[in-house]
Length: 175
Image (cartoon, rainbow, N blue to C red; front, side, top):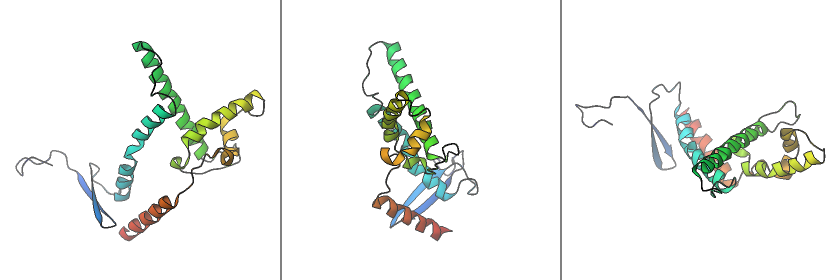
């Protein structure tokens, strides 16, 4: 980390090593105390590092930010800000759907990464139609009640189940 032994790194770091199959993975963190940030959490944070890329992909593909509809600088900024604000609202809606909602009476209790943002977005059209028919007034209860119909919860694929089982096996060995 430093240039030479006589010029060591100014900020101490902790090296976390994990054996995954036959491959060692190494992570650096500036959180030195493993009681504050365990090796498992370091690995999990690193695994989730692509969430920002997922957000960019979603805003470009699903929310249409890949196309700029105006040529004026002010108009471009308005379109970008409006899209990101809508993305934040959509993400909060996914969080509300994922968590148990006592007022709804139905608790999904799913991790956020199991909720399909795209299907929640597409479900908003059906909710708006239900509002026009006076069949619904609140979005979260409407979507949660129809979560199977809309496919809001992603199916756990065999590959994901195998990775989860292997991950639990690795961290059980380290305990």
